[in-house]
Image 1 (tube, rainbow, N blue to C red):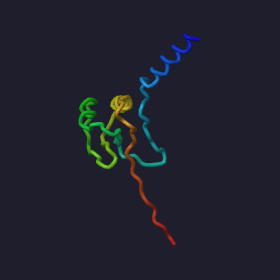
Image 2 (cartoon, rainbow, N blue to C red; image 1 turned 90 degrees about the vertical axis):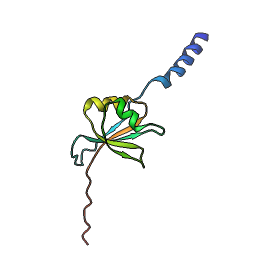
Image 3 (tube, rainbow, N blue to C red; image 1 turned 30 degrees about the vertical axis):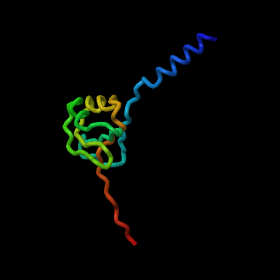
Image 4 (spheres, helix red, strand yellow; image 1 turned 180 degrees about the vertical axis):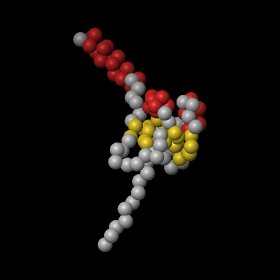
Length: 102
């Protein structure tokens, strides 16, 4: 019994240490101009530090959503996904509005 309690306590303490990967959102029905992505950061994360650590050149820094746009390759995407300060990565997309005919 004592062993089970110690084991469960150890597992409970270890679970928060397991890093989860940030999701990458790609919508198949929309047009994508290139390998441009929007990277949404968690509160308190520093855009410059993350770009420097992953060798990424930010094309634009967003203030409202706290993130940046960049052209990324697969290696950079995987590095960002593993970064604890990245909330998600979304492929840059072009959306158009259709006119309403009455």
